[in-house]
Length: 373
Image (spheres, rainbow, N blue to C red):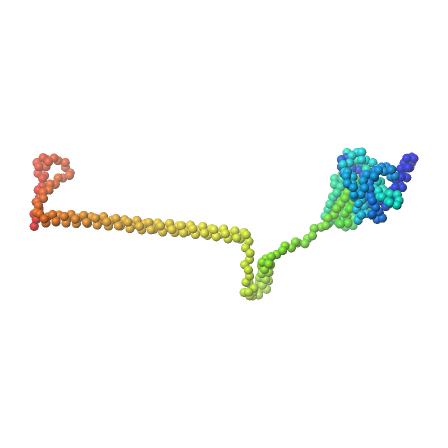
């Protein structure tokens, strides 16, 4: 071992603490983001935490303290005895050694190192670094690795108990089932079935010594209790009445008049529309019937009036003729009574058109005498 390696080993060993743990070799894509946990001992719950950059623990430069915001942020989770470091918009220049650190006021600070590699084609990556599943359900994580890591050890591990699941095997973790499937084509699928609340937390996927963190959230199974809708007094009465009638029919017992006297059931909007439609149709038919009857009566009345007018006209003509005849006779009688007159009349036939000379010659002048008695 060289002198520099020995010094570096001594520095790392002296700084590496069992009270503070994180991953050792992280990979991330250029321009991407990365969030990972740093777990600490219970005794550090109230201490300040920070993120430090530099190969030498004693000379590392503090980048961010707890609860600071920016491209790098540190968030403490005392109830879980850990703090998370979030790195954003990473570039190649961000590659290097870093430290998860705890500030100790009455002694030397404690920390654990991690090496970060930022590149355009990271050795290991995941499609989704944050996944969520429902209690009793399943969740799947798609992991990728470069071709040179094809023959390396492929693992899916859990921070809580440091338990790892190897590819090609199905393992049971408490009540959940973990299946790691490697198609040997630079892709690994991790499936967790029968999720429990205890499965929630931080995991990591690794190929060889390169790691990438994944956080799993397990949500509660939705309640199967049916929501109760408030029921009005009228609806309660209707429901009670329906139940009472049903029980009465089942038992074949008589129901009193008082029990059957209930408020009329509410009419739905569709029933109202149907009643309105039927009423409109009935009114429409009645209008047509009345119109037809009216037209029929009008036709009969017209016929009766026409007949009456025709008879009246015939009677007037007969009466007129009788009056004219009587007047003529009366006039003739009156004339004869006042003077005795010889009336000569000449009758000329209309069938033959002859002159007066011809009439005399042919003796066609007829003399007639009227003798008054």
